[in-house]
Image 1: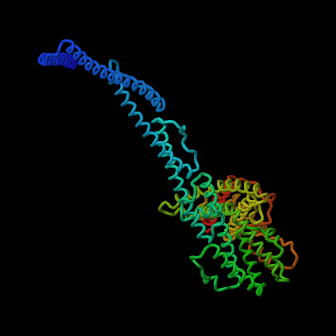
Image 2: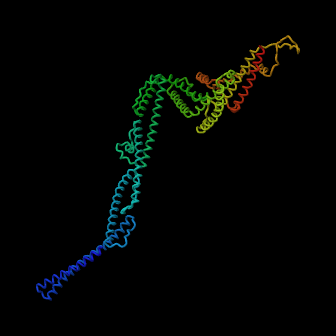
Image 3: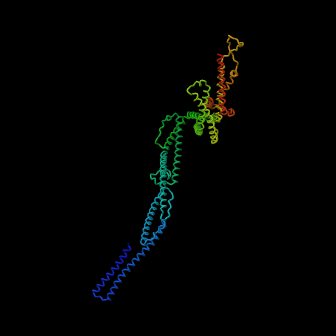
Length: 576
């Protein structure tokens, strides 16, 4: 339709020119211009028209040239910007005029230029944020080649990198805040002032002063650990001073021992140590005037610690100063205090072993109680399931004892190997001590059995046997005598010597020391002479029996004793 309009316009243009020429000819006719002049004028008209058309053609041709040049330039720019932005080449549609081609190329170029500017602007902002985070975290910035346009993938990766750094900064900031609180709290509790630049930066009011680097965080964690160790050391020092002061209060009968010493609940550990140190210094000056009483009380403390550590006579007598009653000097007191410190350290090192032994002794006492109950006939008259409960508990204890002994043996072996010294229980090796307990209990059972047999023999009236009437005699009821059984023979053969040997369980400890301080040694020996405890036995004197052999022997003896008792009771009933 456009073509038809242009053709119509062209025809109209020609028609208009023809009409204009016709009008000119009419004018010229009316004027009376001659032919030569008419030709001249027509040539002038023709020249004007041709010049006009030529100018128009030149201008349009110039326009076409400019459009083509623009297309070439735009194509080159598009190729360059597509390469910069990692975009594919722009493809033109086929059949387009040069004007439409130039327009499409221009629009595409403008769009890519705008996108390029946007990417560069985003890159600049992201790089500034990334740089700030990297400075705080002491990490490497995300690399984007300079003088290039970043791709969308690079910008996306950079944003993810910044997100990771932000999360890491948040995490480190939380750790830093917690560490900062710990440092401030520890410093406040100890009365500690910042000494290094790291400490000062950590507790600074401006948190941005501290760089959240891995090394700084590790340094803070190390600082917290060091302050914690220092706090523990201060607490230990304070507690030792406090313990020392309390010991001196007790020795000197000071009123503070009942809780009269004022404490500053708001004070720091450093202040507490200073207060306790001053108190200890005061008490040590005071005790110099009461050395004899103080040393005697220290010896009471030693005796108590010996008992707690289960020391035997030789271990106790190794501290010779305990028996020195000649000169009460400060040096003697210092030796007693040093020995007390050694004993407390020993008690702490052997605490697991001592607690395990205490558990074994409790079960050993329960075992002996169950054994005594087992020989009591009246227990069969119990109702309400008490006998069944007792049987279950007895079985449990019998299983527990060997297990505890095995665990103690392993623990003692490990302890002796690590410490390079023997672990003694009242002067004996652990297994020797346990064997002594079993042997003493066996002797005690034998003693009690012999005593019962002797008592029953003495209480049984002896009757002279009479002649037995002939078989078949009637009307007479003579005294019946029974043939002695082997058990009765055993009863009558019990001698006093066997009882005295059974009663030799309680053994004394040979002193082996000079007369000086013998009263204290006798006090030690007396304190150690408890039932079922012997200290001068050696492993060679103790039968090497296992726990199962021991319980089996006890069960066998208990059954024999039951038969023997029943026989004696039968004799007594028939005698009556």
